[in-house]
Image (tube, rainbow, N blue to C red; front, side):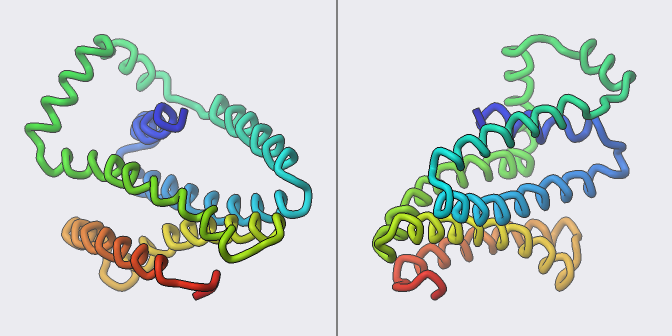
Amino acid sequence: LSAFFEPARSAIIPSISRKEDLVTANALGGATWSVTLAVGAALGGVVVSLCGIRTAFIIDALSFLLSAWFIARIPCPADKDKSLRQSGSGGFRDLIEGGRYLLATPLVLVFSLLKSGLAIAGGILTIIPLYAHQLFTSPSAVSFGIGAMYSSRGVGAALGPLLVKRLFGDSTRVLHIAISVSFFLEALSYLLFSHSHALWS
């Protein structure tokens, strides 16, 4: 269901924030994802190792219900909500118009495909549980190792944008270069990960 939720979450941001706050709102959204992944994965590993997988699933389910409650309480300006309802022209027609816009705007097309590329590469994350099983023997240690490795992804996602902005600024050109370089760094990181023999190396 994340395939439905994530695009909707990104698309709703302009509707609930002012134009001048859009960059900040998107940055906060990315930072929230990073912190949630870092903290949540680490806590998940600890909960599984201490209380078992059933408890972790129950807590996870309750967290989705809590998230849904928060989302339902997000205020949507009446004028924007009205304009959105009036401009709705149907799913297929909107999809065709969106495709035409992407073809006419190559830069936006490239950015729209970034997540698709990451989703394809995301299959490599299935290696993390296998790697944890090779490093550890006890179930609790395996759970902790998986949580720690997933958590490191969130830490990296949170620190990366902050370091880029602090060292190089946040101009459009800097962001383009940073995104391109990040893909190469990700490939290098996976290569180094495949040759590591300990959790912290």
